[in-house]
Image 1: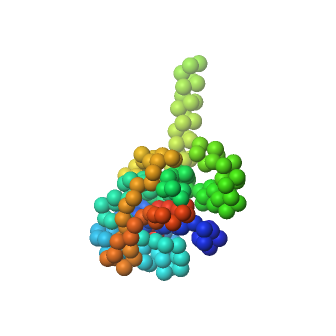
Image 2: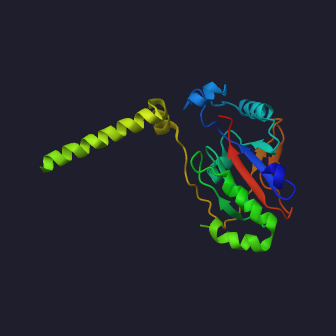
Image 3: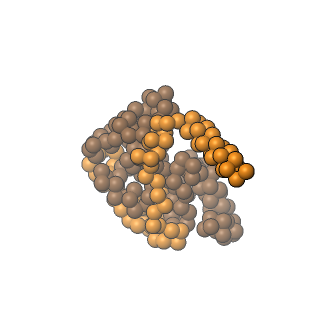
Length: 131
Length: 82
């Protein structure tokens, strides 16, 4: 999505508290994939894990980290993963459900496709987006 | 008769719960009970997106969550490595 629409839309990844750290709700799949971290006790620890993530996946989307008291996550209810789309006027036009079950990149991609096609396609899609 | 129906219904409920528990796994059930922090939150479609600051990957400088006055929409993706 970022590669396809990054020239017309800004992307921001918000790195938040770990969803499945070793010392909380560890997932077997994370052990298998060697993604084993404890819940960070300091901002530097969280930043280090975020950097590991960027390096491992060669993640090209802008990414920054929420502070240790989770101020952004608390306002946006982003845990464990979630999408928002903010329009050019700064208003929320899409709020996804929390992941993993409500995390649907294809819904964001559909919005982006309508946006790329222009205002008519956007107005047709608005009713669906705002349900 | 009613007693029999109730017993069968209870048995089916226990069986279904056992199948679900085995499928999800006991550790995931415990994890879900203890650590699931999913919530809907107060923000709604149509609200102005609240401004906030984040920490950049160097661990020191601060960056704004939202880009302003760009005339472009913005996608926010929340998540973590694990």
